Image (cartoon, rainbow, N blue to C red; front, side):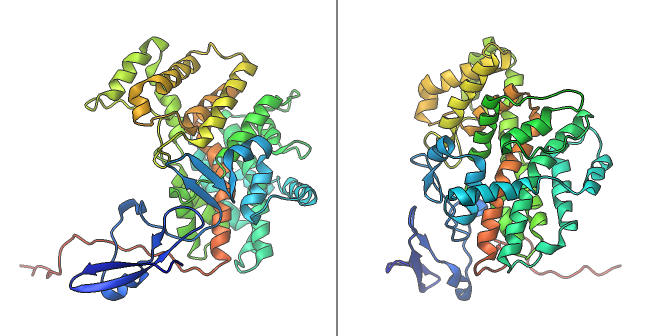
Length: 425
């Protein structure tokens, strides 16, 4: 806590409020005592409110910085794999060689789901959105694992983490297979995390499927770059629902539901829908002009970011990965991908985009990569949810392992004042 204090003068009162300093980022003013003075703060969307104290992730949007436990995301994407990042987010430090091997082996031992759960899928329509299925199935995990309900027990929370990390790829792939009418593929514990996911997605029982290492590397990077992003809408949902003491699997399901929104996790799906709407490379300049016109409802998706006012650091890694994947698959001439590449060129050269810092973001490139791999747009947010599960868990675990209280936001009431019920005639 800083020695500095903020002073608020309101209603003839002068109120002193403590000021806290973190290791990075702006100072925060502690307004908790205002309720005793008869005031609430008003901050729609909580854009100026620090809702918690956390040691997990730091974002400096002005300078394009994203740190996980102090490590820059670019270094993690280059040198680590997803399971190392999972360990880092939960435990606070990178694993030793021995810890890394033990962690991987434990995750591998939990990749199967209860066989009874496979029957749940038959209750969904074949054309149901995979995110609708995922919300239901992940929430149903709480009906199978009653031994992780003691939130005060560190070991039980760790078991819940292993189950979530290991089973999410299995559930995600099952959502896809069900929509395709194909048989579910069992996980293969001899494969890496990303390889296993691609195998469960695209393998069929009647022939051998070999995982392309370039595509597996790209998937692993997508997992890393989506693993956590501080107090976003879905993470805040997880913290709020988790503050009630709810089952951890139900809490993660609430995060999946929040992520489903097109303004949040559905952004990379929206990018592909936009590319389809443009339709042809010859229409790119026309659509860019429409996007610049404030009176035209057309918008370019995948450019700029609510937090990053500079280049999204994750997008730099994704851009490189996208070109690796397109080269590997020989898809440089794919019509939609040619539209995307032309949009990228314009955004990086056009003064309109440069002045407004509307750079291509991580959603723009991840959508291109996933399409090139052969993953349908309806699965994009499912993969995002699978990747983000570890971030949600890390924040939930940090909260319940410390001193916390149930979340209870306030409101500015603008409805009727008290009035009497009308007398009946």
